[in-house]
Image 1 (cartoon, protein in one colour):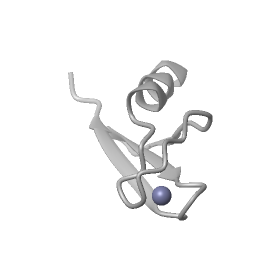
Image 2 (cartoon, helix red, strand yellow):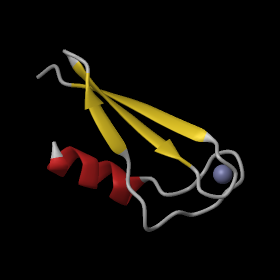
Image 3 (cartoon, protein in one colour):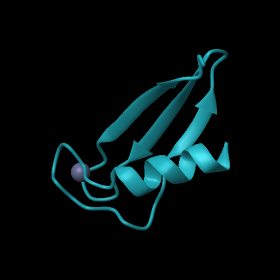
Image 4 (cartoon, helix red, strand yellow):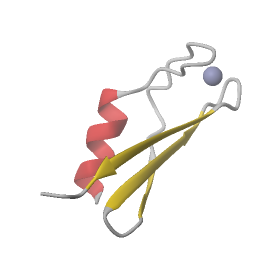
Length: 57
Ligand SMILES: [Zn+2]
C-alpha cells in the first residue's frame, strides 16, 4: 500500500485544474476489492483528482 502511494505521489504532482504543482502532499489511497482508488485535493484551488489502479495481475 505504501509503495503504491509513493509511486503515485512521485508521478503526479500537477493539478489539472489550475496547474499548481504540489510536491509535498501525496495521494490518499483506498482499496476497493479489485482496485485501488487514489484521491488528492489540490491545496491551491481545491480540485479533487482521482486515479484508479486495477489490482488484477
Ligand atoms: Zn488546483
